[in-house]
Length: 66
Image: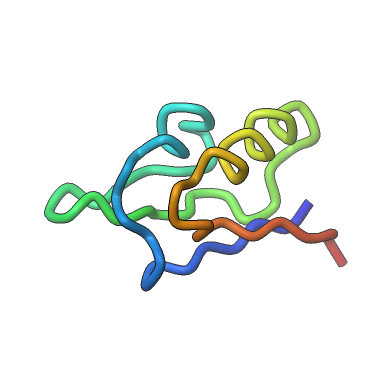
């Protein structure tokens, strides 16, 4: 799995950081997403997919690792 985020789309809702804190965090000053792990281990894939589906701004994109 390859994770990318679009900081321009992010609205700082924080669902991603709550659902997958190993992969996502938020900047303190504005709540914008910080991607901690662009290629998370398989055990985190379910929570990362859930985070992407719950993102109200559709700022998280998932793809296949190369």
